Image (cartoon, one colour):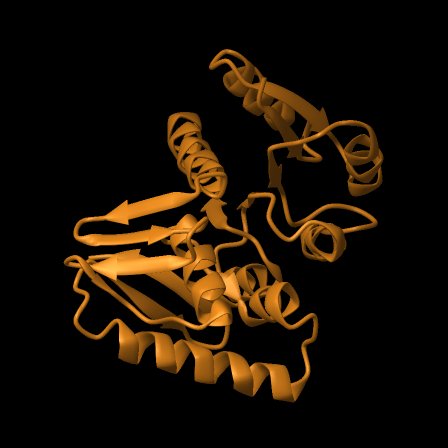
Length: 223
């Protein structure tokens, strides 16, 4: 059973969102405030989190920041009335994966939930194939058109992480924490160097590209 946490302080909307998810074979658990949600997370293994932003006491931004201190990978989606770019940018900077605005179409919400879960599940795969490109986590090798692409261990790990979640934006801090355990200026510059080297080594590969999301981080996008 796929467990989804729904954090929404509006009682009626919380109910209809959970009902929609439950009627589509998910196990949705609704919470009305962040403290209640944090308590639930201690006792339930969730596969995805849906959160509002504007809530009493602890808002959605602070809630996500608290989650990301301990769990870098769980998919998180904001559903909120805030439609300004600054809110979206801040959300992606702190580690959300998707952003929908209210009034939300519940069928569209289901599409986004399904896409986020599919991307998250890819990380369990050991091999990824995109057209003529192939990467194998067990062998630590990558090929394009049958030719091996020489990668260092860290280059390989960064690339495999990006390709495991296609179209998902990873913040710079997420990547630095994963591979350097630091958000220092040195780690930041080193990350940029590794991305530049990956792009150079993949210059002939036209199956995907590593895109820079200005001011936020990077993502791999199939062409």
